Length: 255
Length: 275
Image (cartoon, rainbow over all chains, first blue to last red; front, side, top):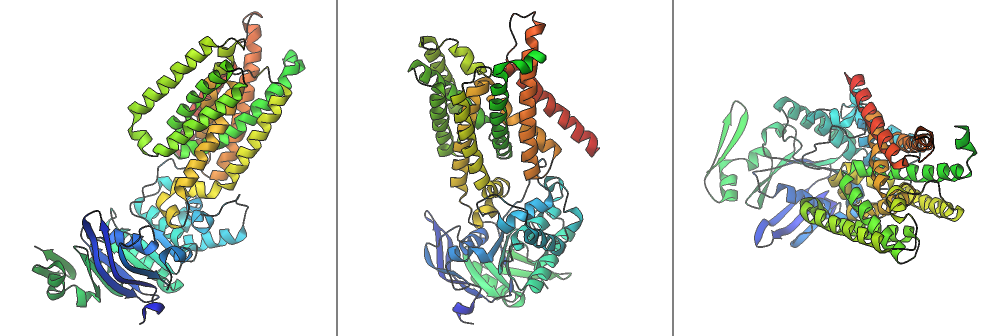
């Protein structure tokens, strides 16, 4: 795959914050329609990588392209689910109002009633399985329900690329599994490329096409088996790493 | 009550107070949503110093109110989130501004009843020119709010997602503070500095407790603002008789009571409905 045809491509990307190297020589390309899990420990640079992709940060060196364009110019085709969505319980919005912001929330001018917007919102709510609580106050919903709505808000504008920053944090395992399943299904049905950040690989196994593993600011990308093994990860961490498979779960022990 | 509607000043009072109440309530919706109640209060209080300074200089107090409120809003905007962290500094600056305002009021001799006008407003003494100015400023402020409505809502509710969607959050936040400053300044001119904040926060918070949908909530806040204001004026007018025709109680007092009563009632109603 040439980089020009890629949904997202990083070419020798460095990102420094002061004297600290957050990301070092990151190079990869993600094909349109691919579901890539971005895995790594705290401070590995996962969120930075997403923020570079969406153009909220600029690389210190190297080049980031989204559908062949600079991230800034591709904004209209990116949906973004930020980290830690905790809405105020008294927020005076229904779930559908919250999702509706994803359609035209960045547009100036007074919003007139619009049948097309309503249809888009209803479809997005149905896709994430939120139709049942569409008219409930959004701040009073559970963490998993709010996470679904954040995804609906991100996909309602029909993006081609969906970025999710730690959407599984603070969720029960079963809820996390549902969120991953929902995301994968929507991506398949709508033909969306997905980059999903998580610190644990297990909920994503079986749903993602490839894993991008970050350690100490460096990256390895490939299938789960090709990346999450002792050879590859020991090279990435630059120290001995054990990969255990226990009852179908993968456990990475980086000493 | 017959005397109430027969009074020539009452028409102007009802109209002007309705305009500022509706405007302030609409702005107040976003003040509550963005957690800016304290900033709103600070901007209003600093406006008092501007109003007093303008009176001392012999110009229309509205000019000073607007100039100082906008200046204060600019400072709040420039400080950003640091304003909340530096509440000692903010408190001291506020105290200093009020102290200077008190000095201005003490020194000035041009206007009779200057203190009372600034603190409690002059709702029964509104010149036709002032009415036109107030209406024009309110129209511009409401238009500005309508134009930035969606990006303002998006950045208030989901700041990160809004920024990634291309909303210029900082610029929007700044623009909103300026519109808020103008709105509270002209509200202070009509109903007094002391009570502008009650109109800013009360109707909006009441509407939010009752309606969880932004556009309908804003419409309800505006309607509540006008009704609370009018009720306060009527009560103030009626109080003239309670005190055996010597003096009516200030509108400010009744606005505060009515706004608080409506809010407490709405919260109780919302809780009863949820249970």
